[in-house]
View 1: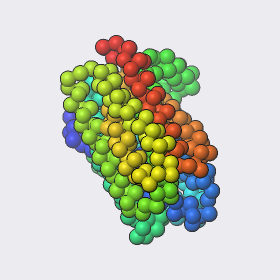
View 2: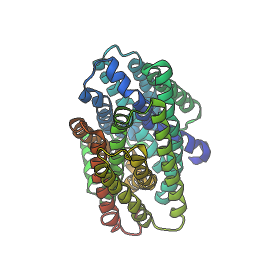
View 3: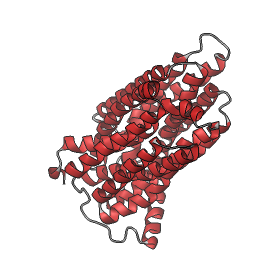
View 4: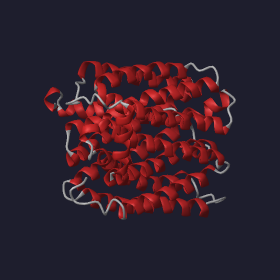
Length: 403
């Protein structure tokens, strides 16, 4: 199958598909305070534009995964990306917050096809360890995309208003659909005609959830993502609303965060050539815990102090994001690796559980945003402890034969 697409095309397409989530969240973050003000939205409504998208994203993968195992990755990707383009256009021209929330839900449903299929394609084409390396390369591409998203979103918002930032999603989606149509070839070797049959689907979910490798790596990828999500959901209110930075300045800080993530993905690939995956994950957890706990200490010590500013937040975030560049490729590929015969379903279940956690975390943040910096520190501190505990216990105990 790899002969039908060069490895470079595979990595580029995977980077665009995985990067769709960063584009959909990061690019609009600088516009969030502006659209909240223009549409007269409350803080919970503003948070709902993110949490509703992520819940729809997670739930939709439970449908897209079996569909891709039944009909193939290519048709699911083309339909999903086409729907994404239409939903993004509706968001850009939303006349009210209710309309925008509805559009974001449709965006999330469509986005589920792209991200789910990307993880399944990795398992279609590669074994467990090679899959972790390829996923790391693709996530490096995601990091490059994320580097551009927040600065571009801030610049567009400052120059042309928040609608232009959302319209950029339509452009990205259209270009990705065009590339899929002309360059992507089917990677599924054998279609599973029973994949969407309810009894077979239920048995598949049970088999996946009972697998200890899936549970360990799914928990790792989910908790690492929830730490990132906590930062994404609160950062614009901390830097723009509380610290008074411009949207463009905020975008540059987000760019620097993405650069630290890219460094982490390079470190991940270098370490995977020398150590077992479990050892690499355990080493990265040291940086995760240092980042999370230092953020908590600085946030509480800096209340009302003149020295507490953007770098008091960003330095701990850099540590966390370098480790995130290790935990995500290892966690996402590791969760799917035991299931070559139903990679789409396993990928979907992993994605659903990640987004379900994000939905509940977003609800918690919406109720604790009276002090955004403290909410950010509390959330990232909590998830850092969870990630480290998982890396040093559950993941560490996996046998050498597993990813």
